[in-house]
Amino acid sequence: MKLKVAVVGVGHLGAIHTKLLANNNLAELTGIYDIDKEKAKEIAKQYSTQAFESLDEALKFSDAVIIATPTTTHFDIAKFFLENGKHCFIEKPITDSYQKALSLIAIAKQKRLIIQVGHVERFNPALKAVMRYNPKPLFIEAHRLSQFKARAIDVSVVSDLMIHDIDIVLWLVKSPVKNIYANGVPVLTETIDIANARIEFENGAIANLTASRISAKPTRKMRIFQKQAYFSIDFGNQKVEVFRLTDKSDSTSAGTPAMMLGNIFDSPRDVQIFYETPNVEPTNAIEEEHKSFFEAILFGKPIPVSAFEASQALKITELVESKIKESLNLIY
Image (cartoon, rainbow, N blue to C red; front, side, top):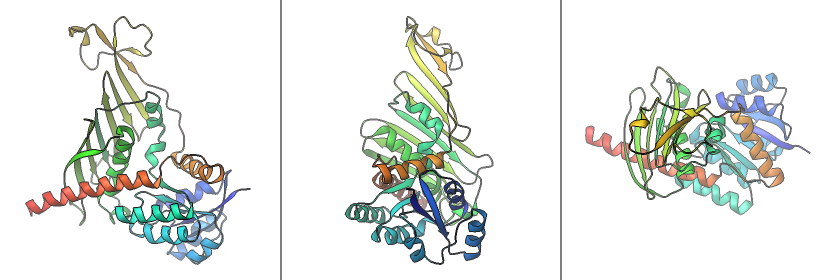
């Protein structure tokens, strides 16, 4: 028996969710809802499903919902479905405030329901390839740059783009945040369009994150430095480079000796650098999100991106935005 699933919001991401759900082995797409009724009818016709007239109708025909509406509407819509006993997949960020996220978590706990949040980069095959090395980051640098898209201006670039890297960093470092320093400016909108944040953790790790939505060339890259290793991740092209420092006597290391970082043989230490490009198995990250959400509901499997984890990413996002606003008040 398949899980009955409705999609709420059929903009850019909602249409992708709808397309993928139309051919899912674990779930049956029962219909879609959008405040733009004509658009809903058009998407429904394209994927041979029905366009619901209201959220109440979507509720009636679903066991779970995928919420892909603007961030500012996430809380009210998720609250409605959770209070009426439906599991929720919510696109990131989980809500537009940390306190609202905590409220949704409390409702889900009381009702024994599952919330999974769409931090899709967790499912990126390039990141999965790096996780095979069990990274222990000391310093992380990330650049997430995109061209301007009018559909995302209801939130700042921190909530829209940087939150992806904040979530990944929190997941990798696994240590409380000690200090945050941040700067940013509004350029094309009334919210922050370009931002940089330095996050310091209690275990000594540091993350330096940059996000922009006014870039000519889209970029989604992260570099992870740790003791005797360095990982370079290209999320967009799904490529990974690994540099590992080993003793010259180590003949078991995979990869080839690397000289692109400099002549390590001039070092007083008897070491060498090995360079690898691990195999990255291509997958559809959103399909993987669907699978994990449905398996958590049907079979009790762990939730890869829980509401709690998403709330922590949102909490740090709010602190970054607060620091930026403080700096802007000094300028203006």
